[in-house]
Image (cartoon, rainbow, N blue to C red; front, side, top):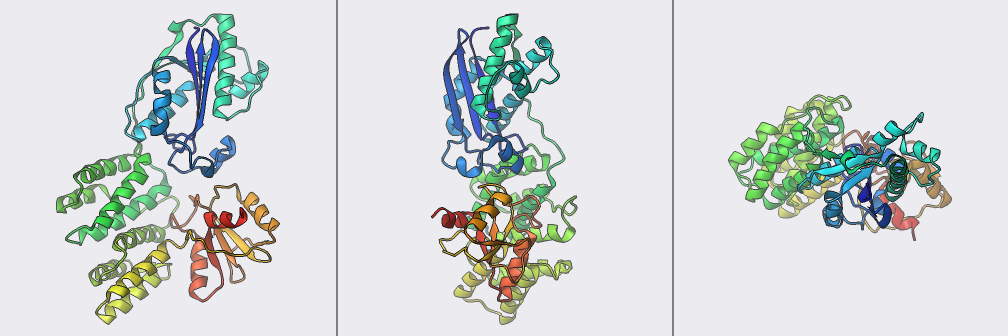
Length: 446
């Protein structure tokens, strides 16, 4: 075999349907004639373990092309040649699932796997690429897409020289999408937010354009989870509605049939699951930046059916604001906008602003995962500026810095326990400020 391309990909998380780096090497007559490498903006979240392995973080790919933008550069190379790689079916599955996520046509591929060839022709205790490369004295930088591709290329050429691998060795790869019943329990936040949004529009005669856009945004943000049956069903229904450009009564009923309240979770309490619904309700009634008496009346009905949430944040605060306005009996336009802002503040306390602040001799606590590194690195950078680290939120803490990646461990999906505690301290007149990672690094990078 003389002509082929070598492929290696890096992915940002465990779902394996997005790509953050591509490495392609083109070989003609057993000579490398071209190398193609690019970071890819996966338009997806990054898991900490993936970042530690690949050394690729979200801020590094912000200006990189997305897969739909980059795919035309490599499509013909991958579809018109035999694709070589180590455990290459993993990469072919990864690129197939990623293309499917963007609703792009998924081609078939011809491939030769160097992992299979190594097992057949090399007698080694381990066939991981790093171990095989070490045995063959191939020096490279593991988990870098173009470097992994180069190592696989040199490995293939080594075996090819000794065993004369024929073109007939290549196999056919055809991706068959799999939809699974069980989904990541952290995604109950997404489903319950949608359930809450739907509770609002069900009781409104007309869905406003901002509310319609809210459903459109949910659809776009959750396409990556279509391998899960429940998300697949919802996406099909939402796509039909979004393609129409409006949502009528029958559309609402059809959504009710596929969007259910997630009432049981292996990681969240029943109260937390209901708070996730409340977040969705608040998103829908504040979508147009005002809250009407009718919306407050329907909100009050839901809250009275869920009094088990008393004592939970932000239930009590929302109920108090709602009662004040309903007892008043009328609501001015200014009050509609003010209440909308108050509600939004309660469910999205982390703001990106240009507010300046000092670090020297100030105490801080960290929450969530950070794009710029792990908490140890962030703590080091802050202490270098004279700030003092604290393990927990209290009245003595000046700043709660929140990582832009959030955390799967956060109690309410987009809000964690430390954030809720900081909000309560703020309500009681405390000095603590909740500051996003983006804002923090505006100060650190000055």
